[in-house]
Amino acid sequence: MRANAKQVGLIFLLVGFWISPFTLTAHQVDYEFIVAKDGSGDFDSVQDAIDAAKAFPAERINILIKNGVYKEKVKIHAWNTKLSLIGENKEQTIITYDDYFDKINGGRNSTFHTYTMLVQGNDFHAENLTIENSAGDVGQAVALNVDADRVSITSCRLLGNQDTLYLSGEGNRQHFRNCYIEGTTDFIFGGATALIEESIIHSKKDSYITAASTPEGVPFGFIFRDCRLTADENIDKVYLGRPWRNFAKTAFINTEMGAHIAPKGWHNWSKPEAEGTTFYAEYNNSGPGFTSQKRVEWSHQLNESELMKFTEENIFGNWTPERE
Image (cartoon, rainbow, N blue to C red; front, side):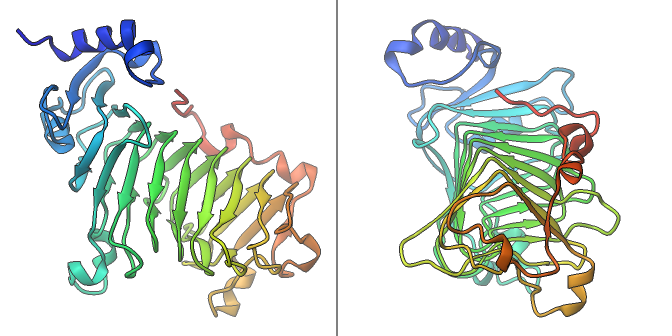
């Protein structure tokens, strides 16, 4: 008789140190389902496991995804609250798909249908996964679209080109830690409030890292803290951001910036009126790409008192992100 998912999780805890490179902690061992390409789990499809999970559960539901390449579009529905997807190994547990704007061919809003993974369930957590849009450099092609509140992403790789990571939903709060995020144009974009920390942000083309669309009156947009900005070879003109909407807010704090960052730092997207409404800020950054004296005059170098506003309590309110 095959052991159930919870029993398998316990076995992994006891012997995982010598049979597999798991980095899972004890509170993640009580698995509802295990997904495995080789048929050894409860499902061989990530989406099938999600669809089998209880709607609006009282307690968190953990799904373990074993190493493998899962080519599928994955949707965490609005009723899949308190759901965690935990990969066996972030380099070898890969969820990938290859939709892009022209392939969807659904009109001006085709971008929003190109995702590999769409998160609409609140209190979602992902860890040790690669989420990839493999379409290539062919225009807008989203890898991960987070359209939910209280979402935490830890130790994941988000791979793509243009529009890799879409952080959406007015009032939504999202947290990323110890991640690798790569792309070309506007590869971190949207209107949510997001703290991205201790992560590598990698540019693959001379273009723009962020395109925030922070709604008017929302105090925080994108905050990068303790990150590293890196790039492919021969990349030497990357802007920190440009405003998708005119009240865009983006801040880089304690971040190491490679030489690929353009001295001016920020771009107005050919909208001079946005210069008076955006809030683009930096504090205590370093590296050859940090040239504070050359930044556009409508950006901000924060002082100590201004920095004090960027606490997690102010950013997230009563929510404490999952960090394990």
